[in-house]
Length: 115
Image 1 (cartoon, rainbow, N blue to C red):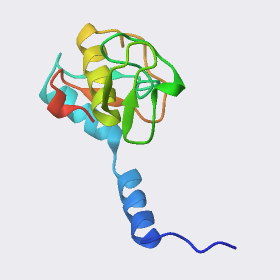
Image 2 (tube, rainbow, N blue to C red; image 1 turned 90 degrees about the vertical axis):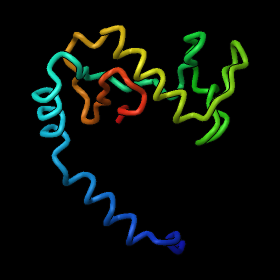
Image 3 (cartoon, helix red, strand yellow; image 1 turned 120 degrees about the horizontal axis):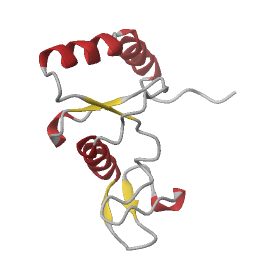
Image 4 (cartoon, rainbow, N blue to C red; image 1 turned 180 degrees about the vertical axis):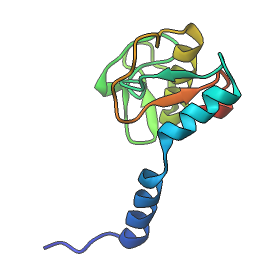
């Protein structure tokens, strides 16, 4: 059997702590405090979709951290590209259909608040 990686115990505890928090309560509280400004967005495929051209493909991800569009050649940090996709989707209000995913991205329209 292989040896576990570095700090596996600490990471497992962090993951348990994150999952134990009430993300649904956070969304409800944000909606109460900022009515009309919070939009729930389905984050599916945001990490594979090019923000400038909209091309979606698994091959757009060079690595965990690098996004490179196979259609237009756009290069960016993968997390920043996905955050822009979430922000832009929330701004267009396309998330009118209830999202039935365990994890939901929440945005108020400003990139600094994408979660």
